[in-house]
Amino acid sequence: MFKGFTRFLQRPGERLKTLFGAQQPSGHSTPTLRVIPRDQHDVSRRLFSENALKVLYRLHNAGHEAYLVGGCVRDSLLGKVPKDFDIATDATPEEIRTLFRNSRIIGRRFRIVHVRFGREVIEVTTFRGRPGDDQDTAHSQQSDDGLLLRDNVWGTIEEDALRRDFTVNALYYNIADFSIHDWADGVHDLEARTLRLIGDPEVRYREDPVRMLRAVRFAAKLDFDIEPRTETPILELAPLLLQIPPARLFEEVLKLFLSGQALRTFELLREYGLFAMLFPEVEEAIAERAWARPLIEQALINTDRRIQEERPVTPAFLYGAMLWPGMRLRAERLESDGMPPIPAQQTASQQSISRQLQHTSIPKRFSMPMREIWDLQQRLPKRRGKRAFQTLEHTRFRAAYDFLLLRESAGEIDPGLGAWWTAFQEGDDHEQARLIAKTSGSPAGTSDRPKRRRRRRRNPSSEHGNDGHQE
Image 1 (tube, rainbow, N blue to C red):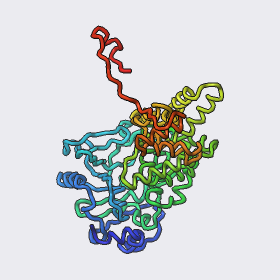
Image 2 (tube, rainbow, N blue to C red):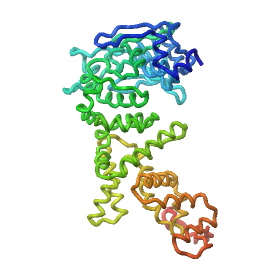
Image 3 (cartoon, helix red, strand yellow):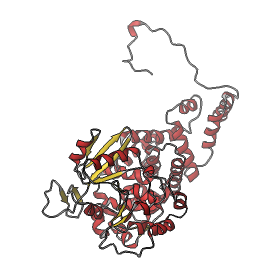
């Protein structure tokens, strides 16, 4: 696709040394700009989205500065094909909105513009400046703990670069001359496979605690080491995540666990004390039930495999696996107090979800299927008569079946039920009848498959007697 691509894939760090020359480590206290001309790098426009290029060129032709920035430039230099394209410009959100009729301004804390091309969204941000004490609270505001509540102070590209989180994300691709602007020695850190925050790590984490999650996500995704100074404050400052709105943390959880490195991400989150801030009840359950951690880890392994195979992944199943151990602990306690199993699990489900919503939101389009998967775990053992066929026809059966296998592999329940359902799905009518007979003790060769009954003609006077509800 472009020269040197194969060599990038094989040894990206070594290739970067060849392209840019060996560099000495920098303290990053006073970063300086380094411009890498087009003939000294291998990043090609052919790697970029056509829609991202349209946005860049329209901004440039309107007299504005326009740069691709962040992950797409970083990944291109590492020999990866970028998927998301962010643009930084000196145009204000209102000016961007005027140039693109297919755009809208979103956000209050950080005002950005989304330019939509069908299903693809190009995110465009205005260069941000340094918030000062004299700024109007409508543009910039911080809490007493240093948390940025609002940050809409516009500035220069240099100020914007130094406001970015990691050095490897402060790389800008200039559409005017196709050069790369390295503001924080990010190329050196790419070469060293190191993740380093720009500025004082403690201050930057207090400004936005989500940066701790981003550090873990990038370290897992890129297989980078977190630089010691960047790493040190995380364990102590992890509780700052409790200040972040649950809706924002839900989006961050999806990024963490749907990036293709979910298992490694889980390990790092627990190592730095961040997982307990996102899933406190799960962390407690891991300490109390030996099967809890293997169940979650296997769910994450399966998630990574599906993403690598480009198969769909639903947050409902992921959250279901995460929250199941804590929910089961609650249900067991309720049962020990005398509550029957089904009401106990229903009550525990509601309680677990309510507690989780204090940390990360779960939209109903995911929480409802998740609860159905949980409820089916109580129906799967009941296979007598028509029940097996009714369960098989349930819309969530396949997910519930996969969840059952997960529980067996983790050692929560004894194996056997999963194999029965595997055989039942794959068997013909005779085999299904045999399996049911073996379970229920009815004569072999008879089938309990539900038979369609002929509907009687109703008396017209009683046609609406059930208020329109079918039995």
